[in-house]
Structure formats: structure tokens, C-alpha cells
Length: 140
Length: 145
Image 1 (cartoon, rainbow over the protein chains, first blue to last red):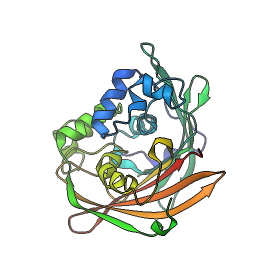
Image 2 (image 1 turned 45 degrees about the horizontal axis):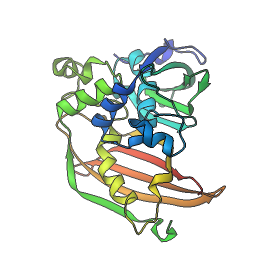
Image 3 (image 1 turned 90 degrees about the horizontal axis):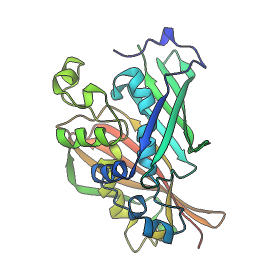
Image 4 (image 1 turned 30 degrees about the horizontal axis):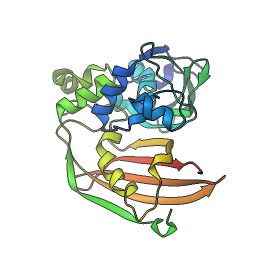
């Protein structure tokens, strides 16, 4: 069941989501996505190219961030558009991993198209890691 | 990078077959717990023909098509210096298990900003009958040496 547009107000918050990423999560995403860039699983190579440690795939952070929307709508098919800018890396130390906090608010409503724009904020280590993270959701 | 590549179009002949287990694997890897991504009966009861793809699954569909373009030595992209700048998906319909999808990469722009090489790709994902399924806009940045 999709979200009712009439029940939404701009600025309203969606329930927040917390995500723990460890090295195993990065290896799982590498296999699922086919992105085997070693900076996402090999500390020796990550530090050799100037990174502080292994970093999460930007696409994994992007994918985890939109679950704040799909947990709310219940169906990924309701998300018509989704875009982000990658502004900071998420450093995934071993064994501690990284904690991501995902929050979201209703950014705009389009009563003609019957869609809502959801503005997403992904925070790691006290700083945002995605810019202009926005999803357009089909409503009823 | 070679600016002559701007506007070029690279279709991949091999179609991508969307499998249930790949969708489940991808959904699990990105924390997508929606039952329509895991349980066929729930997906069908919700009006889908089969399991539904997570929002960013398009990236797994297009990876081979984009790599074929980006790793072309004639393009001249230094992949060791590349970071992902922006990513956006426009879904014309949801991807579901059982789909046979075709992928075509368009090089929309190549430019230089602050010494960095920036390439913008648009990858069109279409069904076997040509209907639009998903469009992926990817911006990759090759940092100045």
C-alpha cells in the first residue's frame, strides 16, 4: 500500500534508520553488485592510494540510505527517482566497522504528479556523507 | 580523456537476465528488507509479476556495460584515480525477476573542472520490446595527478 499524499506535510520526518557496516558487509556488497575494487576490502591497497583505511562503496551507502524511504513505503517500486552526490568516504575500520545514521524529511509535494520528494541525510562520524540525496516517491 | 567520445553510444549485445536469487542477494547486501524483494507470494499479492528489485539494483544490471566503456584504453580514463561523483536513477517501471534487459551507455559529457577530468554517462535500460525500464546517470571524476 503506497503512502497517501493527503496525509503528508512538507518538513515531516520519516522514522530514522541506523546501519552498521563492517568488512563483511562490504564483501557481501562487492559480490552482490560486481564491484570488486580492492579499496573496499583491502587496507594495504586503500592506504597505498591515500585513503585512511578501507572505505565503503559509495553505491552501498547510497543503497542503504534509501532504505529509510522503502521501510516507510514498504515497497521499493514506489521510488520513481533517486539521486545522490558522494561527498565524503565512509571509512570502515576492522573490526569496529562504521555506524551510519539515516534521516529523512518530506522535502516537497507535487499534487499534480501525485509524488513526494523525500530529502535524505546520511551521517557518519558526525558528518554528512551524501549531498542532495533525494528520492521521488509515488503516492496515492 | 578523448573529447571525441562525447555523444558516443555503446550498446551491449548480451542481455541481462534478472534472477530471483540475485535480487535476494542484492537486497540482503543493501539492507533492503521489504518482503516484495524476498517473498514471491507477497510480491504477487502486491500486484508485481515476481520479486521486485531494490531501488539501486540498476547499478548491478549496468555494471558490465559501463565497465566496457570506461576501461576502453582509447577513452584514456585513468581508472586508478577515479571516484564516483554523482549517481541518479530514474525508474520508468520497476525491475522484476524474470526480466530480460538490454543496456546502452551514452557518453553525455566529458569536461575538465579544477584540473579533474569529469565524465557523465547515461545508461538506458530497456526491456526486450524496447520499452524504457530505467535510466542511470553516473558522473565519475578522475582526480588531477
